[in-house]
Image (cartoon, rainbow, N blue to C red; front, side, top):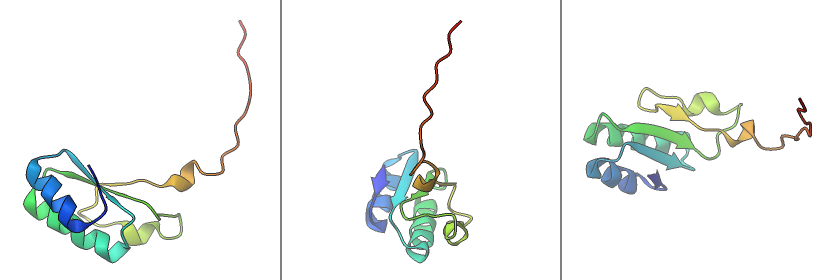
Length: 86
């Protein structure tokens, strides 16, 4: 479940979701929300997303954050057109 605030994330964790995606949180707010989610349901996977860049990645890492998604990995990628003919 994608959540934009800590209250929604805690409600989702209480409802028994498998994964809570904390979207566009500041690092401090992310850490607080992730800790609150894990306190309610330690088995929930907590994912951080939105606003994470290579330079700021270390700020988003925490023991309660299981996964970090970064759009920078795919933004601005140029495609390569090729064919495989056998």
